[in-house]
Length: 134
Image 1: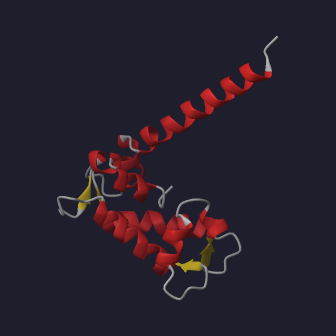
Image 2 (image 1 turned 30 degrees about the vertical axis):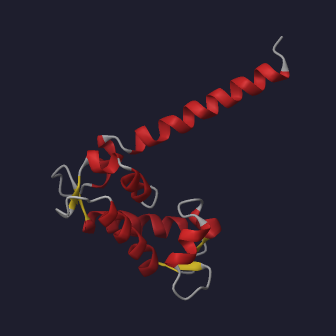
């Protein structure tokens, strides 16, 4: 019979393992393949914005054309949402969302070549971008 402490430890360990595996999955070459519509092995801004716009539509179940903190589901911190929300209405329009996507794309593209490869997507900035695409 397992004690409560053992069960809690096992659950904590399982959750930690899951959380540690998420960035690795998100940064895999599959992330590039998932959004690489021209099959060149990299993501350009147009491909990233197309993926972000598709996700925006999916995250907007009430179809009001905006995403609030609940609909964003942790993709942006409250501070990031406030910064990205120029009209301070607590929501992001598609244009506001795509502006954040573009900022994150540029942050993940240190060589400024206009494309992101799997290595760049593994960076902290790349991971932040991927949270807005998946």
